[in-house]
Length: 305
Image 1 (cartoon, rainbow, N blue to C red):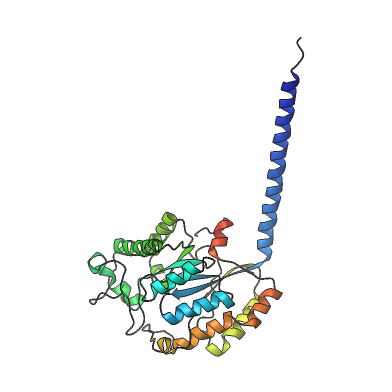
Image 2 (cartoon, rainbow, N blue to C red):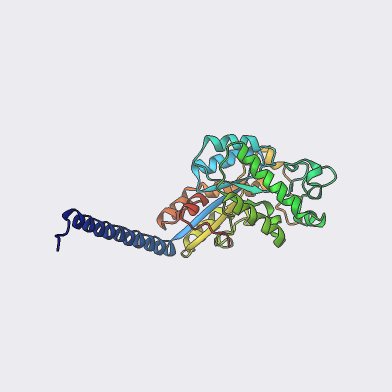
């Protein structure tokens, strides 16, 4: 019998060695992944989402302050809003900001409203006789909005943001009007899949625990600190509406029946709360992990439920 080739023996050994190395690496990665999952289960994770970027100049200023000095981790941009272009400029200047599209079919402020991105004749079921979005979810629904027009307008909002060079990390909805009917939710889900974007609040986050929207301005910081101290391990969502005490925001009057009075006081108080050194100290002491949807997606956890 002819002797086996030394070259053939070496190749087989190299092959076995390579296979063992690959298996070893896979085992290491599996253990690391398991450790990460276990660490996430034991941690308090908090997404701090700001809504209504672009709504006013003061809101844009408040967002910039919140990103620079506060705990805010992402912000939702209202594309049809009056200060959209100024907001876009700020976002492009700060590529580290995690920005989402705050899908909008309402304009709630008295004497300060906006229209759709698309022309009136393409989305006539979404607007009043003057071409403005309706101020409340109830008025929006009563007008009989057509699902196909809702989809057309929402896609146009996303496309307009993209055309300005923005790279959004998520979608969410203004005033939750798009969550009032399952057919609208399905439109949002369709767009989320189409643009490969998670929907904030639909990824398993606890949205209720950190709800401070109706907390009186004087108590917002205190209540937020209490919640941070008592939060159990899990993934949470804190939604804030950054604003400043300016004549511009003092002029805002919410037309919703349950809308806040003197809304500027609530919005400016939220900015003080999320930039508070006391709040940041508790987060540090408790080792609370602040994250955004860009990170959540990178970790494979941005799954719409």
